[in-house]
Image 1 (cartoon, rainbow, N blue to C red):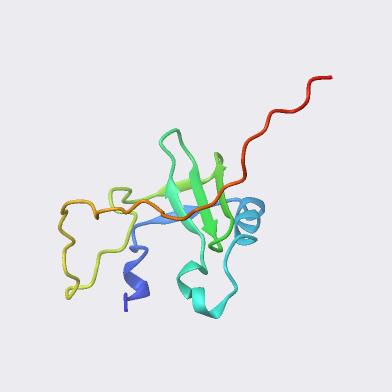
Image 2 (cartoon, helix red, strand yellow):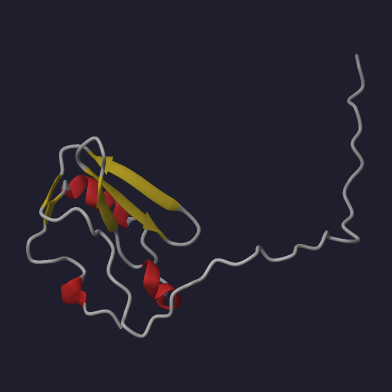
Length: 113
């Protein structure tokens, strides 16, 4: 498990509008099985301000707060993986099979009146 103290370093300060944060919070998952979706991700925007991102797995909110301030180290906005994490190596894409036996409704033209 990641240490929560490592997620936001002490030299980073994020100030956002409560109105924007509350709007993003409406999209946070409340299901116990989706514990990894129970927060709002905040990242700096290239034109200033921040993006507030939240999802419950069915719908998603991406809200830009242009008045927000993101102070401190902006180079690393994501937590580092644990020491025991294995790197993912790129390989060939998986082979896909066509779906066999899929029935569709015939396409008909509407009657011209």
